Image (cartoon, rainbow over all chains, first blue to last red; front, top):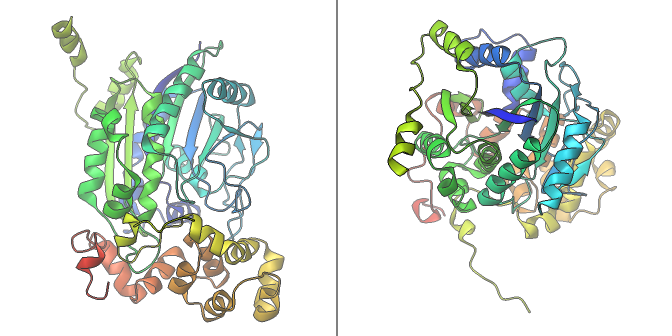
Length: 311
Length: 133
């Protein structure tokens, strides 16, 4: 059967894509941002997932005010790169996984999540920038990608709780797919940022870091956070963070943090990035990467101790 | 008849929530901006802005805000930043340049603020904390 092995959360700032595409990654302004993903590139190369489910939002690119789906799943064999007004990013086209995508669509709909099925959709920076951050600049993306677009532009977006539960339904769908596939779920967008009006430029590092902590330790509680707290505390566009809860919902409750990065600023935005692994991943190669990057080793399965106490 | 309820989002300073009311009000303004995704439309708009705007049944106020590039006024009149930024891109303005304009700063001062950690949350949660509301 297919299973979800890990989750990745990352901002999807368009200026980051532009910096990469225009060869500006070593400039002092951008260098820290890209350095923050060096470990992640090695990690995902080691892991070599078979499929990525990428939760993102379309920024008035494929969708406009004509049609506003709350949740839309891309079931096409390929997704062209959108022209967002500056010409399409010079990155490979995104290859889909129609069989698994349709399976997830059917499973989640029968699980009472009314997904919109999309067979023709250009993808914008919301989807391509995280791929660039995780994979660099390959000739072709190393894994097929199932785009899962969430409306966070037109108020109201889905609640955090709805997103968290959709993640759980996605996990159920993946685990009922017969082929042995190792799947990684990306949750993208955020962190604190406001792009509009006189309060533009708002950043709240305290909010962001508390969000990261709670996303790992107590996502069910975090899922209860109302929209207004995101908007007031972390800026109107920080509402994108509800998408991270879809990724978290798709992972095991006991998923562990293996990497975290936080940096201000990239253009108007706080860069946040997290890698979580489900229990049962072959830890050996990951551990080697951690040693190479001088990172602390993971605890030896502390949840077993907790289990003994409970039982 | 619907009664007017107090909207807690209205208390957040310098922020327009793109809700149902704004979306209805701003439909044509935003769809005009959306049309600028196509190079031929950008060229037609640049060649003759008032004539191009005749294609969209906007209010005189929305039209005026577009022609004057009054970015905050566009938001008040139903514009959404992901749409109005397409007008910005047509003018060659980045998101950061627009953010500076909307917050009444020079781009240099705005960039410097972001480098220093961004606009802080203290004093920016409620309109009661802003002198002019």
